[in-house]
Amino acid sequence: MGANVVAFIRRTLSRDWSAQELAEFYRVEAALIQSGLHVCSDRGIADEGDPWFIFCRAEDDEVIVHFARIDGQYLISAPAYGGDVRGYNFRALLRGLVDRHPVLRPAQQTSNVTWHPSALLIVLVASALLKMGHNAEAAPARPGDPLAADRVPLNVDLAGLEHTGDTVAQEVQQNAVILAAIACATVSQDISSVPMTWAPVLASEPVLPAHDALPLAPVLDSSAAADLGGSHGVVPVPPQLSFLFSPVVDPGAHLHDLASWQVQTTPVVSGLGLPLDQGAAATGLAPLQAPPQPAPELANVSGATAPLHSGAQDIVGSVLSSLGANVPIVYVYTLPFALTAPLNDSVHTETAAITAHLTTATSSAAVSGDATTTPAIATGGANALDLGGTASVPEVLQIMQNFATEVGPHLAVVVTPTQVVEYDYYAVDTTPAAVTAVTYDFANGSHLSLVGLPAEISHALV
Amino acid sequence: MYGNPQRRTSFEVQDLRRDGGRWLKEQRERAGLSQRQLAERVGAEYYTFISQLETGHGRIPPDRYRAWADALGLSPGSFVRDVMRFYDPITHEILFCNSHEVNKSAAE
Image 1: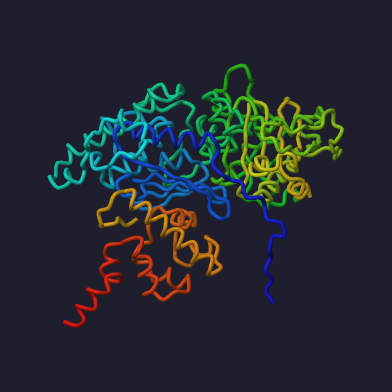
Image 2: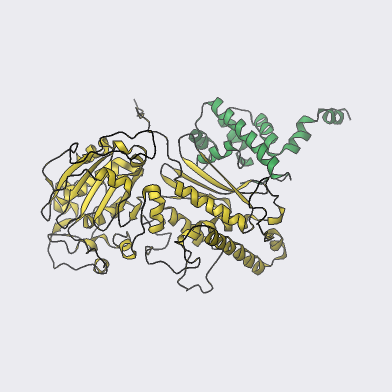
């Protein structure tokens, strides 16, 4: 007889867009309207709590683009682009769509220029609208529309242009409209982080292979960090950091100069269920057999923070590659507040080079009804749970993988120059007072933490 | 997405779509389906599309009318007739609301 497993407690449904995400959507809408494109927008939350946001053609309310975040995964559906795309990296989805359906191209195909991430959303919505056909003058002014008086219709009638077969004129019109929209966004909104709309590829953006090969690469650039961090206060990331654990880099390269361990050239960890307790050979970790070869990526890292070896980032470099392409990874200088709060109570212990001591900290106070109130965190380790003992590197690897399995689609990773945090972003966002933090301290001063619900942590530690 | 060929002001279209969305939601709830369940039954790629429709944006593709009718436990004819009220009001009025002309035509 088959058995149906039904969740006894369903998680609270509060997964709406962050204020920053909404601000970006509305910034795009305002820019398009200002440039003469008659669009409107609406948003909602499905009955299971997943948010959606749509841009519509004002003339007839036809949907141009449907954005949603379903079960933690972003979805973009634009009929003009002929299908849906899904993934955990919103910027990568946008860039993939724009690259595959270029409306605006650099004059020289070999030119090393691309859209700035902040312009991608405008390009996507504007080009989707233009592909559908748009006649700016046909749209009536909405009652009370504050932008109506300032609007300068561009009279873009692409349907008419198509009939004339004047594709060059059509393309010019499209380019003009999109550039106008971007210009409107640049001059009218506070987007000081967007100095150019036709900017060279930023060094901070990871070098990704062809989209077909890796469509949903789990590396976020600094602006994507803001996506995930939202109100968490994520700060820009230095360019070099983004390359540290890029999945396109051989994960083993990061571990070649470990003091006592190295990773074989075969996949470091073949899967989440790898039984690490079967010995070093099974883990892909083996005693050092050859002189360490510093990886170029690590050697190039410079700045106030020295490259990390034998530490949290070395380990996570191998683990991230095994987590697949669906884990959002954010590279920042400082941890978002939502993570620093539960981690403040961790009791850190100096450890040997290979082992890591294990301490945990649990939030002690419930969040008050006032959203502006910071949840109090126990200090001094009063509520800290000292698990005792030490953890070997393979054990830490296994625990990280167990935790990833437990958290599932809500897993995210934040990497700072000295700390790596795997966390359940849904739990951190919705029930911050209930999350528990586990921290592994490494000899080089780096730390590896897991932040999640107590059950997730305890199951990962089994 | 399918465009509405009948030229009405955007405000009229939006009002009708909103009414249609409310009607769809009533039918779904009457059938005891969640939005995700309905999306699966009608072949929608993502279930937030159902939420979007119920809010009054977009419209059901005509090639999915039968699937929707089946999912909601309605006959295809009555389902299309009701949906047409919101999507193609002029056609709906001509076909179903002007009984005088219909009767006259039948008599002739």
